[in-house]
Length: 291
Length: 226
Image (cartoon, rainbow over all chains, first blue to last red; front, side, top):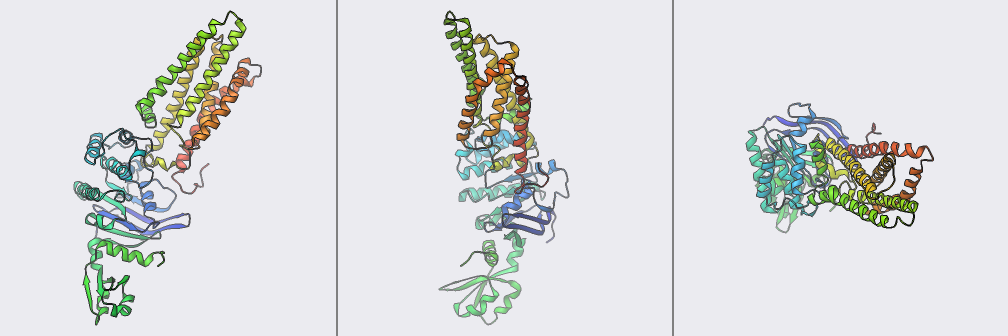
């Protein structure tokens, strides 16, 4: 599938405290929801910070919105939420709205108020520092969705949210994309792959500062196949599998569809993997975790 | 101007705190000045000179209160804004208007200090019926403003209240003697130094905070930064 890109990154490099982000080329497809997946310290937040313009010490080129050069237009069209300290701690929900009005020309106070009500953020005078992590994330989401933007960069939006709100977040992302008629895009990092899978069109899997796999979810599900077999074939099957796991009932792992014929003669069952299974298997290949 | 005030109010969010800063604290200090001024007048029959020196001491006390309140309240406005944890400003940094907004807020804060100090010392000296000339009064206003701004340079670089207390202790310890020395005008620099400090220090304070905010875009200090 060929698609236009909303963001194109070339030769992105950033070194920081024993960590190196190294991305030779990466495009975020236009009009889709892209999930950035990877274990802690893989470089997801660093990449999002660079794209959001709050980290500037990197090498390489980033092109936004078909080569737009005007910094004001770029920042005005990007909504970003962070998983760390984002608002000033003594701000209230009301102050977030007032700040957004001053900071962004395309911010709509009425929409913000409605979103706050819809998301259960009662009490405009509540201090941000007194809110739970989930409520703080809801405030961030209300602030970015109350703006007219062309791209959303959401850093771990699902992590602090309850399952119901995660479902709501998926709906909000889908509605945002539908409103854009192919012009709006969302890039979000997540550890909650299963919860966010139904909204994910494209997936980028990162490990140790590098992109190790990427593609449309449907293509990835065709590229890989989940193989399950009996323990008797373990030795023969293990070298062919990614993310090999074993239990009393047998083994399972991911295999490239093109390699499926190598299992000839083994008693196996195959099924289409979920995005979560694909991600975990690939992450296992590159992780530095022991055991 | 509206933009400047709106920007400032993003840091001074609570309406009741605005009330304290804009009205309650200046009004209380002026009431105190009026009350103490009256009390001293009751004792002027002892000696006119002594009463005048009491009035000056009371004005110095008023100045100490101003410095204390301004530096203490700043903890709840720009507290620790120049500390390393400037990632608190992430939302501001996602907009091109973020740093200009911070600049406007800091300028408004400086103007508010100057105005509050001028009103309290100006009217306070009238209520205390000191025999200060307008020039002396102006010198004290400028000197106290410079001191407040100097104290804020220190306290805004730390996110702990302990630093506020230490800074306040140091400033209030030297303040009365400094004002007395200032008013004697025996040394030329006692006139020019406060003026100079009141001009340089606010700019220096703002420059340091904005430099920190700009550098917070970088994990590693940029090569071309000062």
